Amino acid sequence: MQIETLPGVGAEITGVDLNKLTDAEFDAIRQAYADHGVIFFRDQDLTEDDHIAFAERWAPINVNRFFAAHPDYPQIAMVAKEKEQKDNIGGGWHTDHSYDQEPAMGSILVARVLPESGGDTMFASMYRAYETLDEATRTEIENLRAVHSAKHVFGTGENTYYKTTDAGGNRIGNAAAADVLTDVTHPVVITHPLSGKKALYVNPAFTVGIAGMDEEAGKELLTRLFAHAMDKGNAYRFQWQPGSVAFWDNRSTWHWALNDYHGHRRIMHRITLDGCALN
Ligand SMILES: [Fe+2]
Figure 1: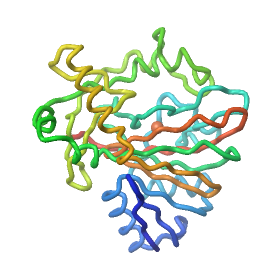
Figure 2: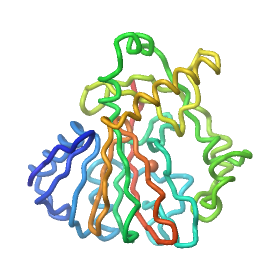
Figure 3: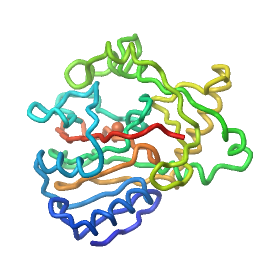
Figure 4: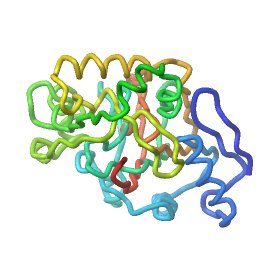
């Protein structure tokens, strides 16, 4: 098994079959996951049952409330876009489930149907985003907590993703559950539960303000942090192939699914794993 560090963020792991992992390989993969935040595998042959079995080696499966589920495997969320559909799922920088009190540890995405070209996923390191902040900003955000919400994305309000895209309805649903979800706060800088390293934990999709700060000042600070975190040096663009699997940590990375394959089908299976409260 080889682990190659990628530029920006992540590592590609080759020479391994996820269906036949030895304990030593599993330990090395766990260490790579903690160190790099996102790991990629190629040429895998995972059935839905294999995908579930691999996920369950890590943590209990966390079923997403808003995504359409696989018709036969409720543990698997469908990240799909059909030929005639315009909007994709995850088409902006975000991290999954930060609106939960105990945000999901990670997500394991398996490619099922890919367009001939396009449909890459961008990843960004929030370890690196934190490490490259200037000293004054680090001091400024040291003890702050940010507010995270799902309402403006998955809820029934006027300008939500649910309401304004063609993903609302068939692919994204259960909007009433988002409306009643209580907004949560997490530290702006977390100490990562696996690596012990500090990471910037705010994201453009779900972070809506800074606790105890007026709205405008909070937005100004977040805009500044987002712009810094989006620096190209923090990012890696992953090109999917049949058999590709990406496993990212939602606490130390962002991701963004590019929507540049109109008129073509792209079907991905996602399993999300339970996480813990963040400090
Ligand atoms: Fe996502």
